[in-house]
Amino acid sequence: MVFRKGFTVLKRHSSTLALENGKQWAGVNAIEDLIQSNPSVIGLGSSSTMVYAIEHLARTRLAKTVTCIPTSFQTRQLIISHKLKLGSLDQFPVVDVTVDSADEIDSNLNAIKGSGGYILQDRLLAQSSRRFILVADTKRKSLQLGTQWRRGVPIEVIPIALASVGLSLERMFPSAQMRLRMATPSNKAGPVVTDNGNLIIDCNFGPIEQNPAELYKEIKCLSGVLDVGLFCNMAESAYIGDLEGDKGEIIYRKK
Ligand SMILES: O=C[C@H](O)[C@H](O)[C@H](O)COP(=O)(O)O
Image 1 (cartoon, helix red, strand yellow):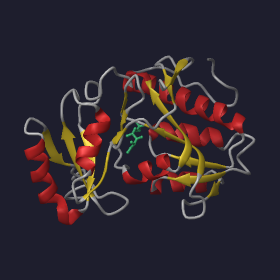
Image 2: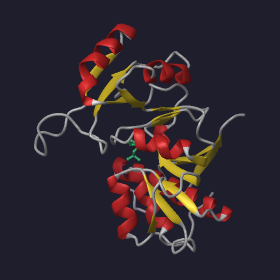
Image 3: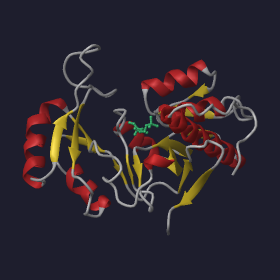
């Protein structure tokens, strides 16, 4: 697939810019394809990749009509600044299609999400959507979750349950490495607090040998766990941009 009209191809001067090229390809092409189905309500995830998708949506013929539901404060601000129509899940509990990015995506389109701290709201939108589409650069692709993304599976925990959930996780997964996600000291002392006022434990299992959907259920069962950054059997397709920025691939979930 080639670049669509209406945006600038980033120059490739460094590996960081190359990653940006891939993110841009994915965001733009996912939006271009999904507008063909004339959705009236779109869910928009939160991330650096989604910035390209939202910028592009604002340039399309749907910009004036489609209602956009954000998964975070960041995306809400982007929707407002691009003068798109803002909606909420309260108003639109059924969403036509949600686009979101991921930290790692396997060949069955199971994904690790949550490095940006958005887990519960990302899931709420994904589960409320008729269609769920992932966007990412090619470095996010892998054959087995936990091989590409090495910072662990994010687990959003209600603060009063932190110690209890931490202990349970240690007992359930003795070889996993866990840490409470901390804020950058120059910006805030203490832990990262999610948009919902919760904390995040990053639980690094190494390569995930177990069926990720089963692992998700095991962790989600613990009281105090709000959500787990494993999104299994949810995405119908993934737009993966390569580092050149002028091409990419669309992967469909096997039935
Ligand atoms: O919480 C964050 C989300 O799961 C993001 O979709 C994910 O971290 C990927 O972010 P980015 O597109 O910035 O790499």
